[in-house]
Every structure is written in C-alpha cells, then in structure tokens.
Image (spheres, rainbow, N blue to C red):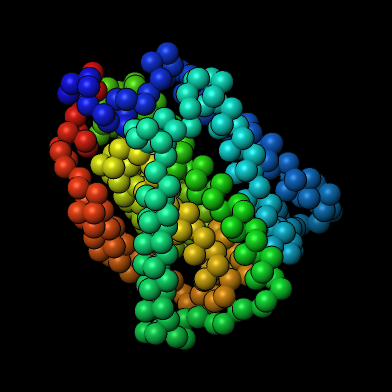
Length: 307
C-alpha cells in the first residue's frame, strides 16, 4: 500500500504517539468514567443499611426510573470530556482526524445513517408488534416519557458517540499503529466492544449466545468505518439504535430500563435477533451503503498492510 492513499488509518494516526500512549489514554478515559460514577456511588453509600441484606441491584431498582437512567448515562458525558482531553493533549490530534479521513466531519453522513437506522428500527418493531401483539404492552405516560425524552436526546449521543469514537476511531487507530495492518484492528476492536457488554443484564437473561450479537455488531460498525474511511456512518447508526430503543420499547431485563412508549413483556430468545440482524439487516445495510457511497477496493480497505 502506498503512502499517498487517502485512507482513515494511514492518514489520520498521529506520527508521534506510540501504542503506549493509547494505553495511557484509555486509562485516563476510564478514570474519568469512574469520576462520572460518583453520583450513583454516593446514592448507594447513602442508602446502604449495614444490617440489611439488600443488594446493590435492589437499591438501584428502588430509584425513580428516570433518575436511574440519568445516573447510568452521566458517566459517558464525563468520559467524553476525558476523551477530548486525551485526544488534544496526549496525542495533539484534532477530533476531525479521530473521526474521518475527509477534510471535515461529514454531518450529512451522520444524519443520513441516523435517519436510515431509525426507519429500520421502527419498522422492525412494528412488524414484531403486528405479528406478536401479546408480547408488548402500551406504557406511555406523558410526564415521565417527556423527561426521559429530554435525558435521551442530551445524553444518548454522548453514550453512543463515545463508544464509536473509542472503538472505531481511537482504538482502531491505536491498534493499526501497533499491528501495521487493517484487519487485526477490526478484529480486536470488535471483540473488545462485544465483550465489554458482557455484564449487561441482557447477557444474564438471554445467555452467553448474545455475545455473538454484540461482537457481530462490532464487526458491522468496524467494516462500515474502514470502507467509508471514517466513523460518521457508524456514529449515526449507533446513536439511532440506542435512542430509538430507549424511546420506543424496553424491557425490565435490558440495560436501558426507560419510560418508553412500549414495554416488551415476552420471554425473549436470542435466535431471532441473531438471524434478523447478523444475517439479514447488517449485510443489506452494508451493501446499500456500498452502492450509495461507491465503495471499492474492499480487499485493500479491509485487509491491507500499513506502511
């Protein structure tokens, strides 16, 4: 691969940052995340009775749902501040170069992928609702929903956006600098992204098989990033996915237990999720983007070495 190719990993990685700086930067971001968790830690400490057998999860379940929702999203806002500081101070890198190989961040790409995935998510939900209406109950309450809506539109972009910037931007570039190719960073970041969801309540409910879905989703976002030479499309997809999920339908066993319009009261299984998304929706979405944005050189963009 020649050095004059305008590729995301080759062009945007800071030349003066070794992989050790990426490990240090990741540690700093984790520290900021711990700082963001102080409010929920304070609540637990203030409400823990030494003579009580209540677990931490019991205490958290007593929280108002919107307060709990805010507390689990707040650390992502604080972590985003840490990420910006790491990018600027530790790596002397602009946020644009962690985002894209283009001269500026393509807002149109973010908006288009957000709209596309919103339509897909809403369509899949209403198809499920039409086929299995007994699996859902109407949960809309204007006051709690409106407050949850405000929390969502403010904090979900930080939560979803930070995950994309860390895995498809920051760590993808860090692993590329270390490993000198494009396919190993894709594999590493996808598996790390997937297994960081291991402690989600969905894993306990659905079993370890859901890790296939999480890792597969990591590959989906990673392939789109490498083929499009930036994280704009995956940013829009990820934000739309989490926002629509929070607003439209949640369940008591999900990470986001929100005051959504509908509640899923079914006894879930992971099989249909794996088939629907990993085998149908994700491949079709990648093909659609490849046609719309004229992706080519798949072998180079996914597997080439980096000089």
